[in-house]
Image 1 (tube, helix red, strand yellow):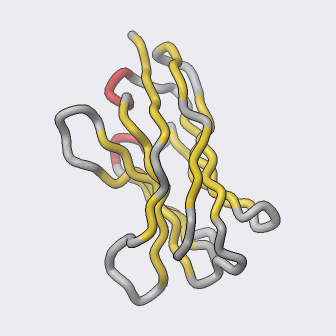
Image 2 (image 1 turned 90 degrees about the vertical axis):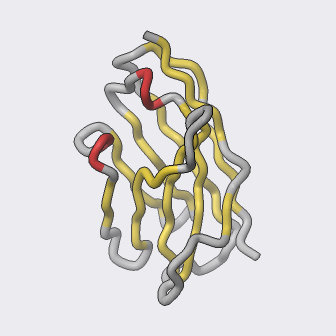
Image 3 (image 1 turned 60 degrees about the horizontal axis):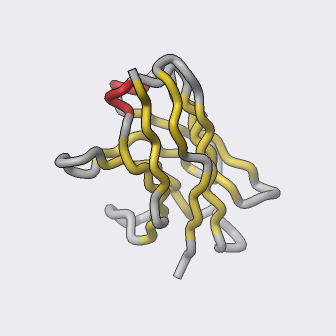
Length: 119
């Protein structure tokens, strides 16, 4: 079972930045796709971004394109989500998740980290 530990959430004013980190316990991540999701109060969990560990290929939900950047550090087994120009609508609990090639769903999840953006 892969373990994921997020950190980096907090309270920030609109227009500010935060960087979320997700440390992954798995030794080799080259068969994994790592994702960030978020869940706002009263809403369903939604996809934010993913990165394919082996080649760094990424994708984002439209609402964060141009503001958020997902990246990974092989040496640290860590995935990052750099969030710039934050908006109040970005307020949510952010979750890191992992799935392996050939699977359709993320079956490893972190505990989540709260991001609150004030207007």
